[in-house]
Length: 191
Image 1 (cartoon, rainbow, N blue to C red):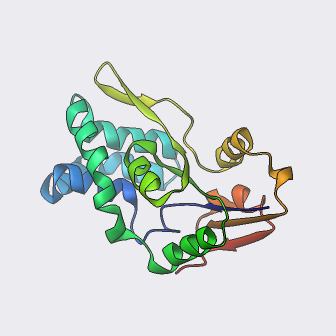
Image 2: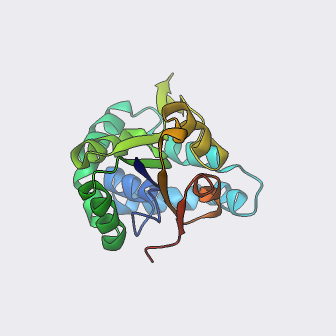
């Protein structure tokens, strides 16, 4: 049996879905104003003072805290926007695996909320970061699905000993643990 694991942002897309989702939800002007306000968080993340998971949550809460209705509405509609940011070569490889009858799994640090609709339409399984609103703020319901967490979440869902051939596709160092599971690993394949 064969299975294929794909990272999402940067592997299957040409743009980061986090920022595209925010622009889609609040508009470009509000997005750029928010990025200016969030500059200390973004710089802190870039220089290693703030963890990726903490920076992501700070960004999301800046735009969506106290606005759960906007979040719910836009996460349901975002599957219509996602095709515009897909990398054609990566998407073609995903479809190739499906044509061969291989199960395809998206394993990503992006939010399950805005990817689940697209994954259902594309008939792929999704392993992603989960968030929930508690007291008008987004908080993690799962660990941020990156690095070693990808391997952990894959192992919770799949017994890889059942697969003779494992494909994995990724584009950052956070994907290396997932790529190490593969019999066929592709790093930055679709640029």
